[in-house]
Length: 139
Image (tube, rainbow, N blue to C red; front, side, top):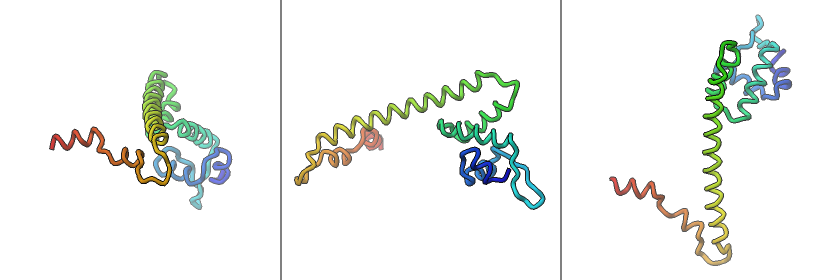
């Protein structure tokens, strides 16, 4: 298969496939004229990578997961550890986003949004963060 075929079948853009090749995640065969020639196993690996990236795994996580997938002697505990760490990061991000949402919701409701110049949103944004105040005291 050429890169267009494998892109269509894997659902990944050709640019992404080239990038994965550049960083060593896949290694398609090359014909005498230098064109990439993808095998079914390359397509399967690309689909695997696409799914892992869609779940938010980093490139390095993907590299490790592919290596574990290809290692028949792997221990599922290794895979679970990677997935649990990624899940923890997602949960942390969700908590941060929920906090941001709550703060913005409060600010939006506090702002009259009329012709007056006072705006609680701008006042809040202009405040020095607790971390910055602490750093100022230490210096």
